[in-house]
Length: 181
Image (cartoon, rainbow, N blue to C red; front, side, top):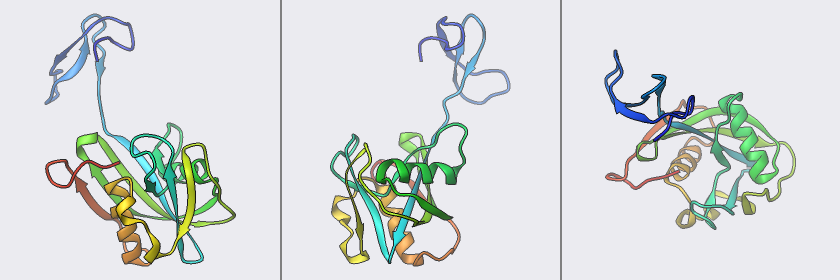
């Protein structure tokens, strides 16, 4: 950040009073600009024992498969965002179940939250997808999944068999396992 979004003046990197790390602070109006992790919400949606996946029509990871997921919007809940993303990417209305996975994608500055879901109608191909399909467990294209966080969520969902066994936590760092969205 070079300029203040409040007044347009330049910003400097300083530690504000009472804080413990550098922030962008406006040189004119003193506004402190915080950069915090973004929240990604997704859903492992099921119908007749099969899991809904979308083939991405956007970068990053164009052409790879993923569970429906994306950035949470202001004014919505975690579960509401997961349902919206599923509807946008797969034209699939769902009944949201329980939260079951949380992945800290540290190097990307993101937290990915996953819910279970049941399709309540049909599905199709949304604007951000090239294709959507229902996959049986043995048909999931594991080698063609877009993101490590989605792979973790799918594995935990299958491990739990869709039952509520609490929230599974995972941390992704480039030095450990590669970046993921």
